[in-house]
Image (cartoon, rainbow, N blue to C red; front, side, top):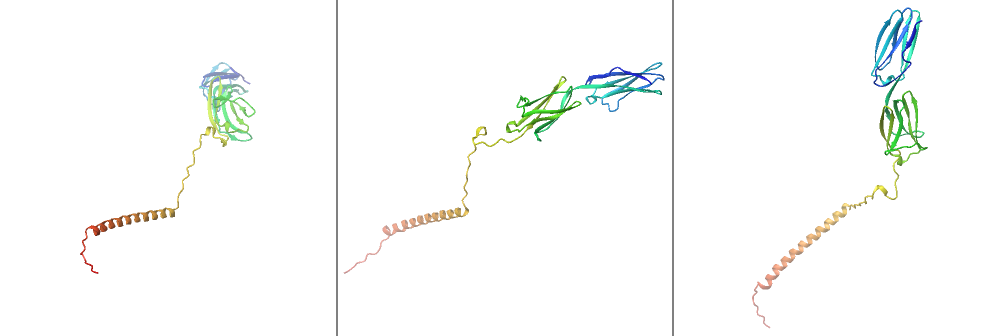
Length: 260
């Protein structure tokens, strides 16, 4: 059966790095040696070297290492007609955090702002409301689970009120970077108040009374009759003034003698 050895058993790199690992297989007959890289996201190249009579070495170079290869097991296999041997390297990729999801509040057992964060090393989370960090309390607290390089959880609220309305900012950080994301949380409308407080002085109500059409029509008739009466009086006055004056001064009647 071939003997096999690798240059690393645990390999930690930073996203975007370039790294080379070596696997050596020895035996008689000379074994075939190769790295299995199924589903590996990073660009990779293989370089084979044979050292006669019985050593076969192969280099695996990863270029622009991807965060999606975090926790990937790099496995080398050495095989000849006698048997097969293998060795593995645990690949750890460090990368800055990203906030994949930050949802608006949802009513569950408690009210939850659900989030998903990814980063390695595990990011530190902080919450802010109205530009102030939210301290943990019995009323507002963070609950989360960890799966590989994912953090999934909730910012939970116990009986929130309108005082809790506003923007909520999640900050995630590790030694490679900091990222933030904000969501608006609306829990309750502000209640009505007897005093106007910050809501301002109410606009006074303006009442407009509409008269029925019958009243308007009656008024129109009365105004028309009054106008007609005025015109008639004026005409009568002119006629009386004209003919009355002529009868008194301008007409000369015949003299009649009256005998008794």
